[in-house]
Image (cartoon, one colour):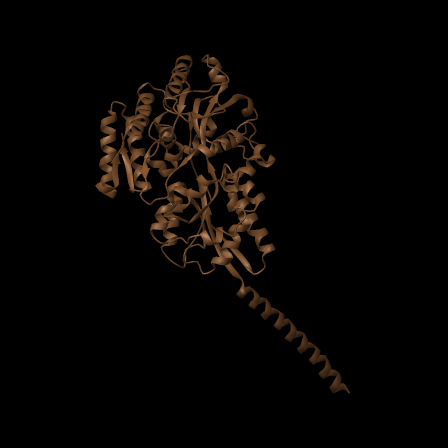
Length: 459
């Protein structure tokens, strides 16, 4: 009897151990069977603050994994500025073991990765996505290369003129300013300079240090409003390096610099220029800012970089006019950041589930607010969560999207963008440079990079 009792006790211990081991092995097996989707994103540059990037992607990971047992998200934050991000992501793509399944990328750069056969076309998947059908056509085209969609926009930056009503009042300019042409902008800047020599009349980005992003936020807006806004002929695969439009743009930069109407070159040529503008505006340092919709968002109580409760009243907004007031009368360039799927991904279906989750309405609105985007779905632009994030400016920026012009999704765009950035930088630093000389240098550079058969001059 004692033997049986002892044996029974051991049996229970053995059974308990076996069950525990079985449970452990089951857990290990389940863990091993989990699919992991690697998501690379900009930790420092895109969102209005690194904390907001960490917060949004952290919430995506947490909430997605709860809703999708068996799929894990590995977040891969990439630190640094715009060019740092591009360099590091490109290095990740160079090895299959480091390439992310999904990546957040600036739209003007998509073409280079498509040309390197790194990204998967998304047309078949997007055909099943209800949210994609709601996108406006210009934004759909932004991620399209050679007729196929490779990138899906999280949202875009449109651009307008932000003006300081306090500075305008001192200069005798109207509180409800609506310039009709580029000369109206220069005249307002001249009045500002005359009224207060310590104020920077115009903030307008230029320079090669900012990469393609600086072009979209600077010169591309003037190109879009010029007499010849088309700088790439897709049918002929040719880039315009000379023409009336480009000459108007260069002359505007040159005139503004020669008359001392621009912010210091150290500011508008700075690699971090796109983000450096915000602190100066509440200090009434800048009269007119060529800026994206992310700028006024920075002043709200969520981002507070810096906080400026009076922004609604003290900051006016006006569309950028066309050069001579020609139709359609206003213009903007736009560009955003997109999600792309790596062609070599081992888990493309699971990765696409993550994309679909990111683009659910609440997540899309939140990333739009945190990153300073106009949502690509028009219906979202009237949502209270969007309008109230920066009252007084959100709707105006959103209304510009239908007339906006995006950069072509083409690998050679980087070459053309560098050339226009270099040309505008030259006339800003050396306003004695003639437009003819700046155009000639632009032509030489582009031709040297992509060949004479890919450039053209327009009338």
